[in-house]
Length: 581
Image 1 (tube, rainbow, N blue to C red):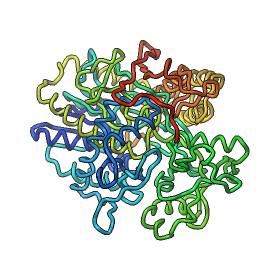
Image 2 (tube, rainbow, N blue to C red; image 1 turned 90 degrees about the vertical axis):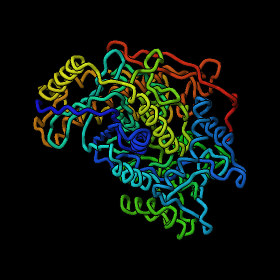
Image 3 (cartoon, one colour; image 1 turned 60 degrees about the vertical axis):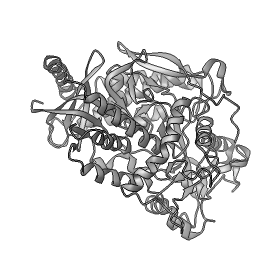
Image 4 (spheres, rainbow, N blue to C red; image 1 turned 30 degrees about the horizontal axis):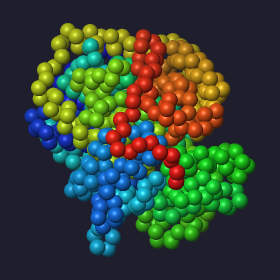
């Protein structure tokens, strides 16, 4: 590990999804004199944003459709089980409409009616249809347009298949990033004045998940190890309709377009849990309803995997609607499990999907440390961060809005900062580089006896078993003990491949280290919260407890351990109420 290249950029963006590319575009627009790099561990167009199916939320036709920013904000805050920071939610809803126009201008083919009006479909927890969509491939079309736009910019470079292993920080001030070029194993040092972390979520800590294998939370772990605090990590969203047995997402749009959930008796059971909203209740409520039905004996056992599930029934929908509005759902079902959803119901159960928690940030996307003070030169955007617009439970289609809005905000703010800063002292940078080079060499050359892939399976089993839809004190205690053993085993993990060219074995080990770090934090935060709120459902503490727990969990590194503290939820106009649907 001795071939090293030093590159200088004003701003680097780690992650190439919707948030990352939006940040690059708006930083570039802020000043053509800035040099910007987008660094992706994949080919940039393979970022997980391409998998977003259902749509993006925004108030477009307020008067015509009896909609408003206040109504969108209220839906979001209620959906969050009142843990969202309300000033951040107001930023989200007021900025989302301009983002729809932005994507329209760069070529996203929004579905339109016969008059050319942008269509909006119903989504869970939304009072009225507010989700703008491009069939059921919204994320792909948004990404394609963003990629083309970014490629056209003269001051932005994209580095595909470069894995960032550490942030180079001194006294909580950003100086650069250390990356491995996966193609040839060489190292690149990205010296920069500012950094935006937009690496997405970490739901791959679970085994049964809708997310790509790349969703390992690298940026979140990088920030944590660099001194940043993480917020609300216990809140992991389980999407109600993960396809059995593979976990592939069946978009909420399938229910938005009229799909039914049925139990083994063929009954639409959601009337027992959310009679007014039925299949369009928020995801946490539907996920709990499905697991409750299964535990009551109303589930169906899958022959191949033995997984118990319910059914998502689309057979009553007009075949034309299925082909026009849900073509990918049909394609996924037929190709992966051999079922035509127009003729047979789909087997589904909750799968880990979205991480509400992430890198703690202020409303401008600036990364905060353990004392909740801004770290110099560091921003975050999208699912990697937690500005807290989702609180304890995200409403579907708000995530793409968040990526777009805070991609813009972080890009513009980082550009302002970078224009006034100098590069870090070379001596400081040299020492930081040397430290990381030594760390990576020790991992690569270690002669351990632990198979990383077996260890990852253990990690996934622990999270699926002890930190799933329903949680209990006893089970979580067992889970934490097993995670401690996994953490210890990781020190003896073996990298079999010692070569340079596409050493995915080495990359997998580095990703595993990030996942173990984050899983441990999720577990600690979950075990500490003695209430049920949103996606965190406790068997012993079945009620939401606003007196004791209307607060954010803040996790930060202290030596080799994680410290927890709490901060107040920012409430502007919407006082917490009982959450009914």
